[in-house]
Length: 260
Image 1 (spheres, rainbow, N blue to C red):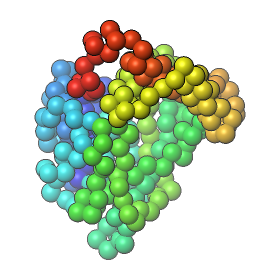
Image 2 (tube, rainbow, N blue to C red):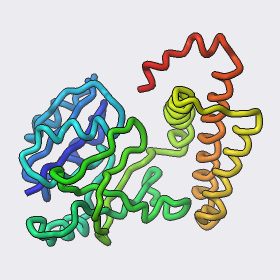
Image 3 (cartoon, rainbow, N blue to C red):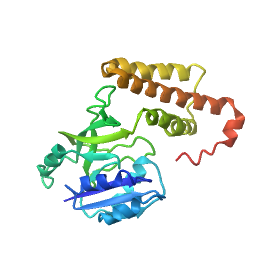
């Protein structure tokens, strides 16, 4: 028996398909909602999911909230914009979770922009642990880029789908609005500092890594776009960190207690 857990904030466009996907292999689904103002909660409850309300605490911490409400040892964690493929459903059904020596299983993830599957730039196979035994492991209690801290995971050679971005505009908008600002705040609070070359060098390194070493050049326009987006995100992260160091007015007006 498996418990599905999803964290949400205004996911009315995604939550129905996500829950229906989980219900193919899960006996219960728990939604940990961060005070959505749309009808995410209503839709989830209509599908029989249990909803827990919790103001957002950060990625890993938030994903662990649902563990206290789970009745099964095995947990399947999906984001609202992720789906199980039929191939993955069959692979999970074939597992013997009562006797497996593994404490977790990693899935291949297909990342999409719109309806386009991006196979370069490190976006595939993008293995990530999604199924785990909560009595043995859980997500790291960190606020950004959390992962399950399994000691003996195994890989399942099947895919889940991740609708990463609806379009290219969203791909470029998110780094400036969310990711880079959060990262800069976290780095500043940890005492990390940048110099005048940091934004350029980190941005350039990010582009080279995505476009050359992770073969973004094979992905045509989409490969170039993903590499540029990664470069911009990295550039902005260090530019904002440098701004905190150089501009007292910006620093004074920033609330570092509200990273999220």
